[in-house]
Length: 336
Image 1 (cartoon, rainbow, N blue to C red):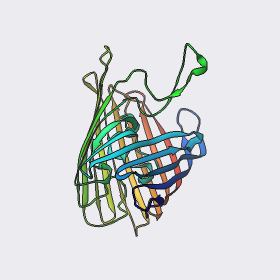
Image 2: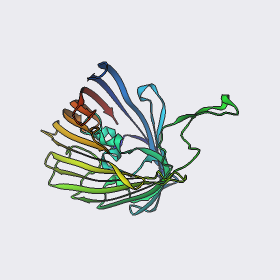
Image 3: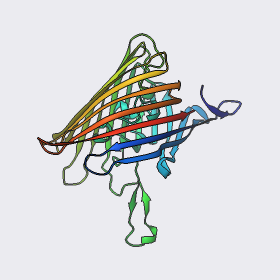
């Protein structure tokens, strides 16, 4: 159940090896532009995790080779000062913001996350945090961290003095730190960061709220705050989840959004799902809508599954005009 591992006889050292690959075909009907069809491998992950010297000193390394690129996704060290109650983590991983973002892309009900995910800036970053193993959904979960605020994506940094030393890097020249906090409540032993009720059982639920404060260290006063609240409920194969978001720039709210989705697992193998998402930036005539339906087939839970979805994406151009694109995706996932 725990994958392949190597450990020392005294169990002071342990290393587990895992992988996940997603093979996808996508067809997009673009109203303004050319239609697109392609096979792809959006994610091809290799993960190594375990502990060293003590079970209280754990680590995780994860790289991605999907889309023909090699990128670092996670690499952090986690020290349990008080196991299960107070941990300190340093390195690169997902900011503790937004349930759908924290939930692995391998444990989603749909092929992709909702449009709210990119709109409100969730993602990985480099930093340090204290927490109580919030990803394991304890009764009360918390996390508080400070991050670069620039994300994990490398960009090309030009060296004017020596162009030959120009390179891709994700270490910012100027840090505008992000303070991220999360607090949640989990009831009934729910797996709050795994969509679909594959485990079954009586009614369970999880509630959470997060805030990200991007601090401006310049004089232009363009600080940004993002707040969200989320939930997930499961009961006897039925799952229902959603979240609401608000973005503030320079002290005024300039974007709102929400998403909600539901699914029902039949015979622990088949799951029809539906989702609606909405993003409303400041001003008129620029709202975004997403309506999606899908069907997942679980052969070995999330480890081996086939997902197919059809989505309609509407983007307002003006208050009276909008464009509508359609997207069909089907994907096979293998993970261990």
